[in-house]
Image 1 (tube, rainbow, N blue to C red):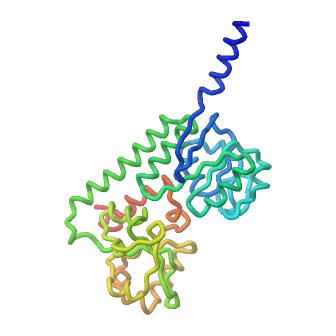
Image 2 (cartoon, one colour):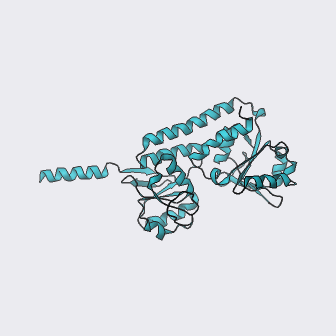
Image 3 (spheres, rainbow, N blue to C red):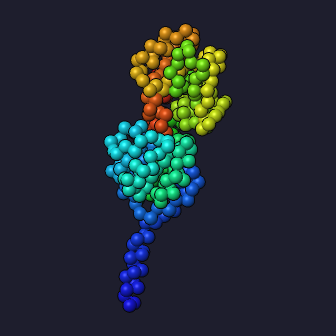
Length: 293
């Protein structure tokens, strides 16, 4: 009988050896009892985090908005609970505040849910570490987090050596500019875009302002008045076509950034999804601002 108790105790120890409780980005306590083997990624950002950590083989479902090859579960919101249940996941990863209402729905069906909602560049490193603990990939997570922090420091140091008066003023927008647009969506304080611009040595003209997660609309008058040295446009279409629209614009054509050819077109799908991938934009922005010097 004593041997049975010992064996039972050892079995329980083995079953619980991995169990850990973490606090996710929504401030929720989440207990993970085993390393996830079947994961539904409910947002493209979450998928990128998993890929960066090398655990994409655990993904069994992604949304229709995701380029990753896996079973499609439908839209970002509302989530198709029935489809998700059919995939028998041991973890569902949601992303951002906009998916928070979906969490309770998922949990009602007994699904384990993790909420990621990084808002800053440092949050990216933090969430990598969080996933590293969950997927038992701490060495890989530490290495990736270290690389991210090193890039931030590298360009922060470079930029700190440039006098403020020598730094270019910058305007970033996710709105394809045309003369009919009544407002242009941009990124101010509290956004990771503002961080990228600042650390790369630029002066974001909308830094004094903020909005939901740092995003806000501005009007043409504001842009014309500030007349930035550099314009960065995140496009979801053909970059060449976007450039043609800008150059033919009666309003944009008056700006010195357009006259001087200081327009940077970036992939909207990539830069609008905060993930480890966006760290590369520190170098892209810096090189564009300062000609690779």
